[in-house]
Length: 173
Image (cartoon, rainbow, N blue to C red; front, side, top):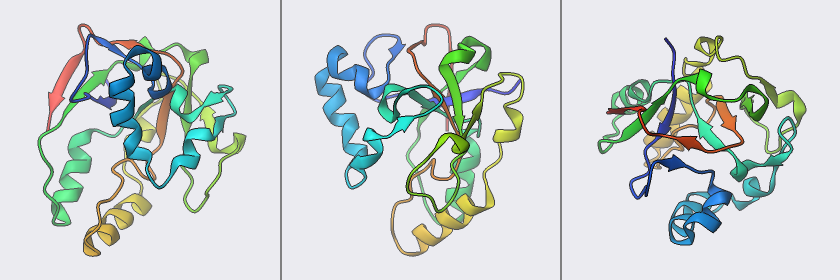
């Protein structure tokens, strides 16, 4: 079975994963900490996801790429990462009408309806491979001594809802 992966937040309270914008109400302190990852690229938080009719931070972001594959690629390029935990999420748990896939086309600073595709929980394997452009990006960033965005160029599964993590498997890499 293929899974989707979402990093276990180090400061997670309770068993519900909430999208970032929802965290403003649930736990403003955690929201303030997690919104920092958008420093220097704040404009993405104002973008609307056409297929869901909501903002980028109104959804949970997941990947079909196993985190161990990303870790392996980064280590091959001279980067050592701390141990991290990820939820392993059965894609059948997601409501299809609240889920879309952002294809993450290279070289675009904005996105439109053509950059998204419909979600089918039985067809996520095709999105579980790291694109060659992402591999080159990691290598170039690390050669320059810069920290790459780990999910850059990798298709994102976007879920407009919250996920109860009780009973989900957690993997550590």
